[in-house]
Image (tube, rainbow, N blue to C red; front, side, top):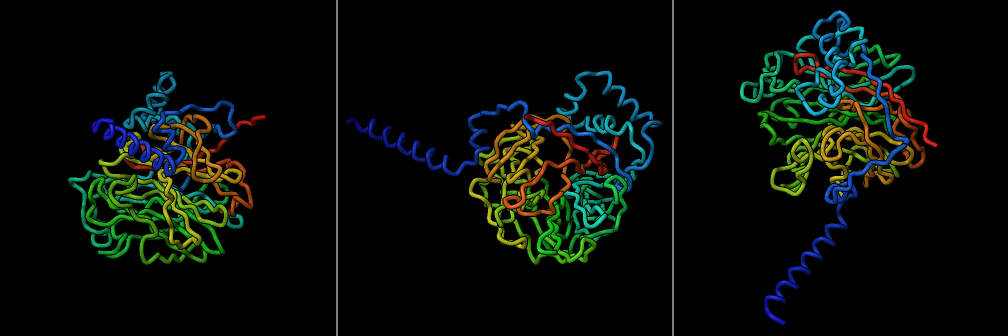
Amino acid sequence: MSMNFRILSIALALICLTQSTHAQTYSEAFQRYKDSDLHFEKDNPLFPTFNYKLVTGLGYDGDPKTDPLIQSKVKIYRDNPRARYLVRLAGNQQELQAAYHLRHAIDGFVENTTFRDVTSPIKIGDTYHAWYSKSWGEPAVGQERGSQEAWQEIKGQWKRIYSWDFVSIWHATSKDGYHWQEQGVAIEPGPKGSYDDRCVFTPDVLVSGGKYYLYYQVATSPHVYRDGPHKIAMAWADSPDGPWTKSDAPVLVPSEPGHFDSRKVHDPCLIVKGGKYYLYYKGDGDHSNRYQFGERFHIGWGVAIADRPEGPFVKSKLNPVVCGGHEVVIFPYKSGVAGLVRQGPELFSMQYAEDGLNFKLATHVTDVPFAGTFFRQGHFKDIDKHPAELPRWGLCHGSRLGSGEAFIMRYDITFPVVK
């Protein structure tokens, strides 16, 4: 046997060993992405139809029926059979989609104020509760012209880099899920030098053991574009009205370089399964690793699991469990977890993981909500003991016409009856 042949044999054996080892640690979604097996099943019970409706009190204020700008956008949408497809491909046409959904709205926009990234709505007694990111001030001016000081240091005098910059978490309540009243700020950024001295945003809520938990994204000053790091923190209260006690440190932080979540961890969302707390999150990685998928650079979804709401949360070795996706949109269904994926190689898909980790493609989806959340009927009960039904409504945000500001919307959901 020649030396070259031996070297080639050893190299092939190492490659096979490496591939075998990797195969054991890939989630089903990542393996599917590698294999480009992106087929959809038809007639699936998880195929939703979304019916968008405006809510009052959370960012909108006027009548689009008499607004010439909105009506002109609506006419374009109605006259162009490809408009829906074009809106989905072009980010600068988001206002076109908003115009279509707002043509029957009642109330209207609050100037230079953003309402976005709302939590899963919950119901306590006869009252619905939701928390959301809120920011106001001058219109966003971009990375180069924006303020770089901490939020507390320049409170009320900032120049926002983005519409979600210098943002706090606010609380609102409703008796019917349509008409909302703001109850004031729930969580503000911390003092200069703290882990959350610039932004607290993209929250989600968990109810467990008689306590209320908010998990949310945090950022510090100065803001370094795309480099982060953004982390996930937690606060708890004995009442949905607060007061809220922040965790001493973030409960989830970016991984080491080379991982899909090495820059930022965002958009927390909680599921209780098998006595464990599953914290799903969006990860944003660096430019040098193997997780370069999706419309938005290296974004995928991961999950970290804990025995207690306070943590510690341990990231799954199968991460990323969803390839692409941007904002995390999940809900419990039966004893598993469903995910609504809006961007990336599997964009506009509904996926389902019976074990909460290996997501299978269920069906395609159209007219997907931005940063959607779903009403939690079961109040975060353990889905292994209390299988969940399909949600019937949720909240999301839309873009204000002609600006980067946003407002909260409601959508009702219809799922088919599949025999």
